[in-house]
Length: 81
Image (cartoon, rainbow, N blue to C red; front, side, top):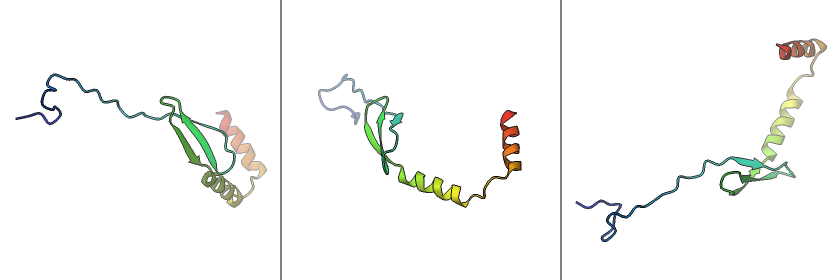
């Protein structure tokens, strides 16, 4: 029975397969709807769509009622703990 990973005449040869990179992207500050990023480990470049995050944050902040002085006081006390 033959090993499917070896060819005829390649007996004893070692094949090394590199593991895929677990990317650690450094993302530039957004300049428009897309931010460029580069992996710190392998150097691969990617693009991230930042327009979705902007719309989400703006809509969330517009839907939220304004903070009252009591809310601000509670938030300050909670952060101090």
